[in-house]
Structures are given as structure tokens and as C-alpha cells.
Image (tube, rainbow, N blue to C red; front, top):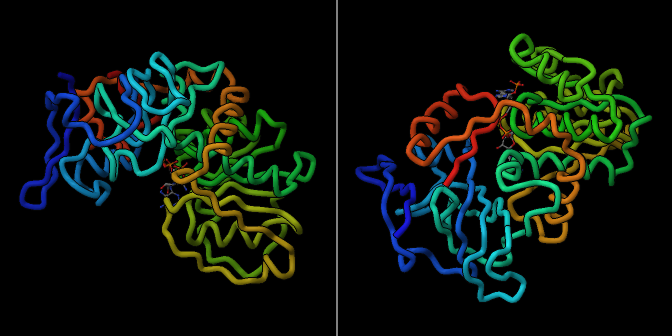
Length: 326
Ligand code: NDP
């Protein structure tokens, strides 16, 4: 028997309880994992509280990120004792996720835990971290060089934004961090490597089709009018890696930045990212993130404390990462 956080639905309300399960209840998969840590993401908060339609069926075990040790594997790529990490693939949404002492998963979804980081650190990175790495890599691949000028990161104090600031600064880029919480998080963002803070309100004014060229590139986690403003301010031949919709899923822009300034808009998805790219991204994260990143605010909780934290994360009351010890 093992313990898991299980979501059920009664009269359209999501009920989260800790349950004792046995392995025969786990969903199908070719690798059985003794889960060491999961993490609490905004998406998990929406699933657990029922504030967002994240769970595709019930009962569901939430947890979009997990790390642990292989107990049994029917796939030759993994043996008992291997340390693995998982993000994405709809785990915690359509397939039982990480908030459980045991998980049964598809081998195709797993990545060996990269050299240089431990399980807890991998959960401090999680989906947010790998998404940030994919954004930064996309800018590098698009030819945006550190000497080209400043890189703007929007939603900078969020999970994705804060890792993007750190990674870009480690790679020698000059980073301007956009935040709506400058007084609260400005110092932290500078400690992570931002050279200056830009107030979010400056980017919320409606964009003209083309504005003064200010940024060599950008990582955008916000979407909507902020992304439209960023596109209008990107330098000739610059690029924007867009991964998020914290400010909305619309994009009130024109074709002008693309056809007159050769600006590239690069879409980033980490959920279905193929193995090779995913594995490379984990390795780069392990190489690039400094020890100071792992010393930032991180709260470790147990399964019993998750329900309360889930409510807090959906109310914007959590700073830093919440890592769950199983
Ligand atoms: P967080 O909630 O941690 O951070 C989002 C940040 O955006 C906030 O911290 C805030 O930063 C800013 N923000 C919040 N609301 C608004 C608003 N209304 N207008 C402008 N800025 C706002 O989320 P994550 O960093 O985990 O994720 C960021 C986005 O990326 C989300 O939309 C998420 O869904 C998406 N995502 C996409 C993935 C993919 O594969 N494409 C994977 C993971 C996440 P500040 O206070 O500094 O302004």
C-alpha cells in the first residue's frame, strides 16, 4: 500500500483527499516509480482546487512534475535503481501524476536525472524551468547573440520568467526584467541576474504597429497586449520566444514587425517536447543554473500540506517554488 493525493468529483465539485492505494490501482505503463519528490505548479493548484478544468477524468492523481527511482521496468532503457525525472505529457491531467508515493508511467515520457543535480533540485526546476530553457535555446538558435543588445523577459518573477532571467544572465546576455511587482521582487530579480527592472505598466499601453527598437530579443510568458508591445519594440532581425498567456491568450498585433523588421516569433511548448531536445534541455539546466538559484525561496511540504498550498498558489500567495516530499 502507498499514499496518494486523489481528486474526485462530487456534484461538479472537486474533492481532494489523501488515500491509501495499492499498485493494482495504478494506470497502465511500462515503468513503476518510487516517487521521491513532486512540485506544486499553478496548473496543479487549479486541478486540486477545481478552479480550472485540468483533470480530464476522475479519480485523478495531480502532479505535472515528478522525480524518483525506478522500481520495475518493462522497457530496456530503464533498470531498477535508475533516477528519473518527468515533466509534461499530460501527466497529472490525463494520466495519474506525481503526488503519490508510486507512479506507473510510459518509458517514453521519462528522462534520466541529469548529472549535477539531485531530485529535489530537479523539482525546483520542474516544468517552469524546462520551459524557460527551451525559450532561451530558441533565442540562441535564432541567432540572437549577447552582443546584439538587451533581452527582455516578461512575467519575470514567475516560475518561467525567473529561470529565464537566470539562464540568460549565465549565458552573458544583458537582461531587462518586466514585473508588476517591482517593489516586492526587484531585488530578487537583480540577484538572479537582471541588469534592470521594467515596470509592467510600461508594456500595457496599446502598441503602435512599429515602435522604437529597444530589445535584441525577448522571452514572453504573458501574451496579449504585452507581447504585442514587445513585438513592436524588437530590433531588426530580433526574435521573441513566446510560451505563456499569464496576461491573456489573445495577440492584438500587426504583421509589421515580421515583414518590415524580420522579427521572428518563436512558439515554445514543453509538454510534448520530444525526448532528445528535452534531455538536452535538462543537461543544459544542470550545467547553467548556479548554486544561488537553488538557494532561492523554496518551501518543502508533505502530501498533507498540499491542499492548503494549492489554494494559496491559485490566489497568488506563494513566492518561489513549492517542492513536495513523498
Ligand atoms: P507564474 O504564475 O509563476 O508566473 C506568471 C507571471 O506573469 C507572474 O509571476 C507575473 O509576474 C506575471 N503576470 C501574472 N498575471 C499577469 C497579467 N495579468 N499581466 C501581465 N503579467 C502577469 O506562471 P509560470 O511562470 O509557471 O508560467 C508562465 C506562463 O507560461 C503561464 O501562462 C503558463 O501557463 C505558461 N506555461 C507554458 C508552458 C509551455 O509549455 N508553453 C509550460 C509552463 C508554463 P510579475 O509579477 O513579475 O509581473
